[in-house]
Length: 296
Image 1 (tube, rainbow, N blue to C red):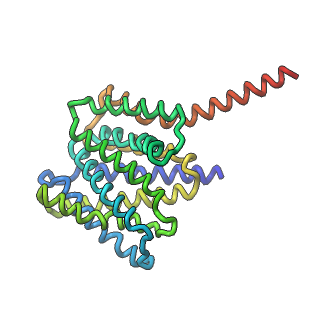
Image 2: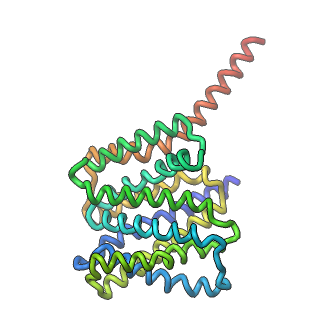
């Protein structure tokens, strides 16, 4: 069991490396292109990549088209927000803001799915929101930072909607339909903003970003089959370390002290809260045993 947990952690860390590489790839977009043009090219190339796999597994069909349609279009809006943020902000700032998504999942789960939230989790959420404000420095990166937060919100909604998908759906369906069903809306957005900067460099970046995303999802599937989510989810935060390192190495980006404090408030409470709970339970049991011994 211990070996499976270790393997799951390693797989998830490897997956987050490719997730970080996806973010890095956006920084290499041609200067004359725009966010909707890149998103359109990325959607189309991802469909061409996934279609042969869909045919190879027997052309499976979904049981609930409506949920897939909802996820795809909400996800496309969120993807646009993330691309806007990556084109305008340092990698580490974008990553730290996006890591508010798990806190949003918790709050949305409480509000709409009636899931139980502990006092410790609420404290994590409050500290995380304070951290977001410190990173944003309201006024200095308002639009791009807001776009990233909107992207995190849509990601949280899409993750929660996964619970509404049929367990009988083939794993490839959420991937291909996520891109296919949103294509009309992405084409509309590109038409409104105007297609710009089509080039071989843009196509290569789109292909590279798609490969990174698919490899990330593949590693995630393998990781969560090895161990329970609660045992390995902490490895998800390795992505922030990769992003900070790559931003410094490739683009000479670095967070200031206030942004580091904000990132710590977003990430650390979620990491430490489960450990603090375990320590509390351990000390409680130890105290009860000691008290019982003294009575006898």
